[in-house]
Image 1: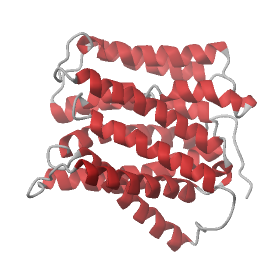
Image 2 (image 1 turned 120 degrees about the vertical axis):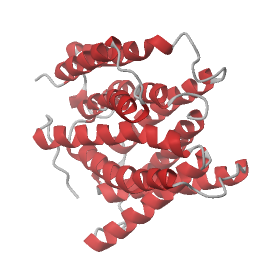
Image 3 (image 1 turned 180 degrees about the vertical axis):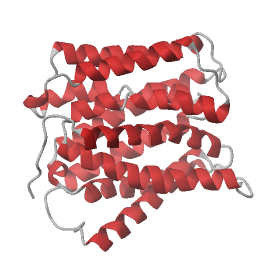
Image 4 (image 1 turned 45 degrees about the vertical axis):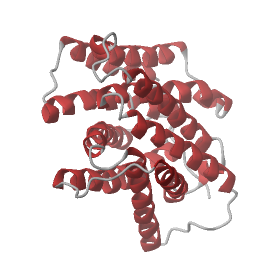
Length: 298
């Protein structure tokens, strides 16, 4: 199977990326809310297993082959294991830190992709101005959150949640590199996503069973809505769109756009949770916009 790759992001890619970033920013809030009633690893397992079932049904409906021998098994197992570890870190970390701080730390992934892609595709080597754009965008986001960095607002173990967020960001970047550096780069988006969801779902379900944390006796309507959003909208639809983008557009430029996600997280937090919007947020928005312009220069 041949895949046409574009060298620049067009209007379709940019609109798709903004939509994905909006959904992912909202996802952090949704996951944090549901943890009160559904344990973190169990919630992560439900997301992956539910998403895997939907991807499988979608592929069967569209006649997309999923089990043909195309040499992608090794890459699929690697990507699935990284995906499981990433979301294990995110959901465990949300017990100790805020959703907003988690959103900042997991979005170090563009740096991992930018540093690793030249070893996979020499055409995606970043120029100094583009690397400066990544640094500017991330520095702006960090500045927007700096007000709470010196004070553990989420509790004494906030450092643990922050560290798990950093680990998740590294794992997300490594997952993107694993896809682009293996036969998965030529596989369908459905097959790529199914590898990750099925493998991570099983691994996280085993981890949840071993951890043995109790569920709430009954789930509230808000928790059910959160689970539906995470499984159907985020894990199925947005990830399917993301992996299609990874197959058709430069990974480094895609990764730079994901820095919009923590900004959306702040805006949605203000709208849904009453969090204040400060001058630092305005600085973060300007820096992210400037960084994206630099990364996507001709």
